[in-house]
Length: 138
Image (cartoon, rainbow, N blue to C red):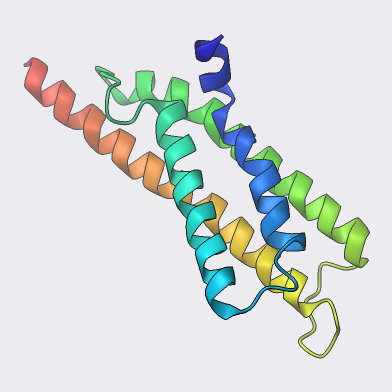
């Protein structure tokens, strides 16, 4: 069961991202920063747990990409789902600072940026670890 959950761990970030977009509207500055940091750390933790970034011993980049591509696809699907929910809730993908929904747009942008940053950090960490392990094996 744990192995199956690990393969789809990044999908667990979806409810937390939705809370970031829609649940932080009444919060003040410090609380919002704390929620954003918790979301980012959870994103990194789930990315690293799914990819086993610190324990996987891939012998080459092809083996690493076999684990990374399904994770990346899931991260893209989470981003698309959040985008569609945001689009249907707000009615536009355009963020207008003068509108009453600009806060949602800001948090949506932060949410997508966290997904992208998490995927990039996981890619760099996993590729570097794979290359280090490959050099150790020789």
